[in-house]
Length: 110
Image (cartoon, rainbow, N blue to C red; front, top):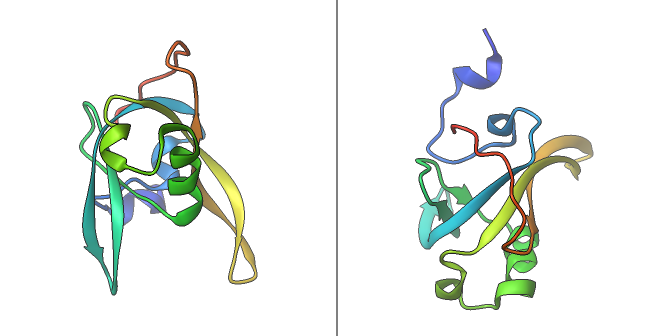
């Protein structure tokens, strides 16, 4: 059994990508209560799970598509897993890369 499968989530996790870099199309962005915080969650066309945005990923998308999340609908991005420092350890984290609309990519089932 893969331990990552033992803790299902409504939101995308780095382990869901299984080491792949994938292209997705943004469907919408909604504000959601996550624990004690309210964060933007981006949803993708044809996918069940949304991705809770952190500042880094949100600003990466906004740098190309603008600060108004309504303007992100229909826009492509890549999702990938990267090691980042967190509380003194290196952990897997979701990251986004904004790409031109003419670039293709894989479409996993998450």
